[in-house]
Length: 324
Image (tube, rainbow, N blue to C red; front, side, top):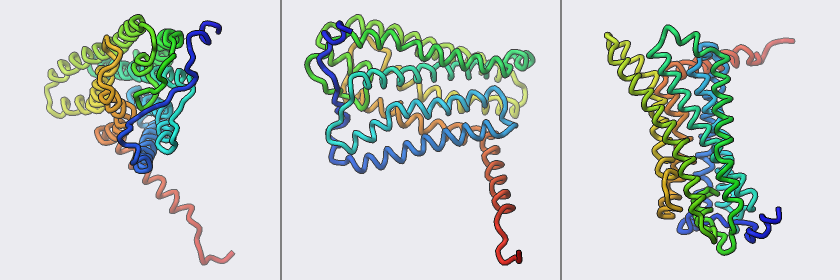
């Protein structure tokens, strides 16, 4: 505790965001709030549909529901604070709160990497080893895989957070970003951060590149297996089960690779902030729409749910004009 108080004189940070857009705070607040409502509503609907429809009680849809559940908390770490900062003049965050935001943002992000990898493995087994698939991907196995994904996800950023908590922040406290994150925090430290940068590079490379490589290898084998299917209908059906997941993977990994796999403190500050908008807001918005639009069974389940709700409301509607 003595080392902490000796090294750190900054007790809070100011999140700068986009200074050139300060005059549009109210408009940006409305837009971001609308986006956040879409994220929450879309992911909650996907989660509820998968959990309530017995036809979707399969490993693939179980993982989709877990991913939707994760996205709700992933965005809750950053977007509410971003909304507040759009309305207040002093966009401050306490030192400890900043570290906690960074930790949970990276923990949930790493968990998403592992979940997406598990989903690729699930599709690989289903398409390349269909006979062994039911005995391997059991209900117990899917739950164990999810627990492992979250455990690894929440363990990965601990080293980075501990290292950055020991840095002295004794000059500027303005974070040139839209939320607390490792790269902008490192740029504020008034000491050599080469060890932190190297540790971030190694950990992020392991999480991102290893998982992405595993996903790509799985899909190469899946594509080879699909091309061996003789009927065009069979090939289309196999591709349709993978299309939504592969689209989400490419969107998610493209942004985080450019942001976190690098051996420098930071690139262009504007570049980092724009990229952060993509992977923290836009990608979570698109995910529910990708899964609902590209997945036929989820669309049908949603229609069934709406029909059942309409019928239920019609049956329970009070009959006016009847005698008691």
